[in-house]
View (cartoon, rainbow, N blue to C red):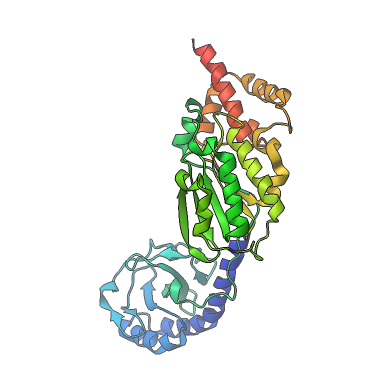
Length: 379
């Protein structure tokens, strides 16, 4: 999980632990004295419930994780849960031999099917013998929130797609779409919508010849534009005039550069090509989806800095044949079985050691060449 998101979750957990730890320890001491009397245990839980802020349920389990009290809530008790074996639930999988108090990771509750979190505290006698467990359940939607919204990590991220698509990658070839034929007009129109009509997020679906756009004046709804609309400049009249947003982080002068890179990625190779691309001028993010079903998310500055040398393993003007030959020869020297295994693993989305420092699209081209070589040996 990404570091910033982890930090946000940790803050929320810290708030809950602070609310809980002292209160739950006090209650446990009382419960240990009456562990064999379920009526007294329930009375203790009911009496303590108002102190457990935001709590959903309280209950006691024996040393085997079997519930020995009814489930106590704010206004009722649940008899059906008496005798329920909770030993296999996620919140009971902690190391209780070392920790008396454990706050579980979030999980989906078994009966309400809602995101929940549970605090478990062991109950022991004065001789430190295990008597049971106190369970305190929380519904995530009822917990106090953190003071700020989680902020996305805008560093480059690569997400692998469907292995089935990857396995058939080299048997396909890019077909000329209507958007390919009219790509300059499409880019010009999108540029106008961004500059003058409040579009802050646009996505090009090159293969299916459509775009989706989001407007600052109506950010909760997106519009779908087919090639009929994209070929008609009058479409601009359908959207109110709106100056280029002050919220934008992408300079207007960089938008044509981004579109130019989209064009190059679309036409650079007939097998490995850009299938869809988007930009968001407010957060500055670029998304790319390739024919191998791999997706990339990165900030526009990083996108422009990488250029074609990153995506296709080329210099700005030409392919470097020595790099390809060196890698391919190194793999082939390890034998046919190794080559076949490398091809198979690549199709499954596994990066082999020989290609680990090589850009994704260049990896695909090397595997394509290896397949061609092995077809010769197969005859």
